[in-house]
Length: 116
Length: 111
Image 1 (cartoon, each protein chain N blue to C red):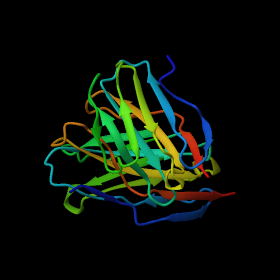
Image 2: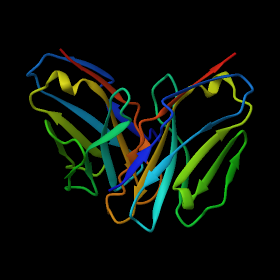
Image 3: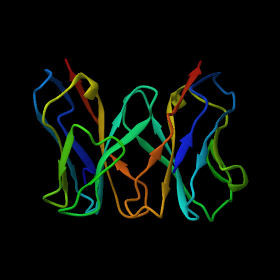
Image 4: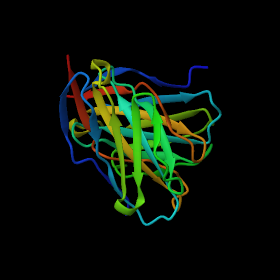
């Protein structure tokens, strides 16, 4: 069975603080893909990143960085120097390759509130 | 290039009524998906399609039917709406292992 757990339901920080959103996954697939999506208050889902299970290099994109650790089945997301515009719900998702549908298994999301 | 579009954006139904949600994509993607989003539960897969003329059940298929008669369209039907189907519905499309592109969502309320 595949599962994604985002244990942090809601996080509140003050602008310019760093914040890390946790994601833990379970899968029996040896090849799989992990994703992060952002859902701002307007409601659309915005793709942020995709990583495959063979690439454990950390990735940085501006103020965003991702830490993928297979040993702990985690794919955590850090926002450095948070801004009010980062306020959104963030979803971590998993796609296995044993299932030919490539469907996404989503976590329940973490709501991030960045206060001015 | 509009990406993924969904019609309608909002709808209110009475219990027992039927309706069809339309999803259209212009990226020539093979894979299309219907998810529902409920508070505190993330997105859950209802039905999906791996190509024109094919459909399959996802995690929560009961009460829904789908059709993929044309590659670019994926329809989600509710034959007899129930209050438990009040939700936000998202359509998505993808090409094999790439990211899924999502539509703007349809907010459905069943009274």
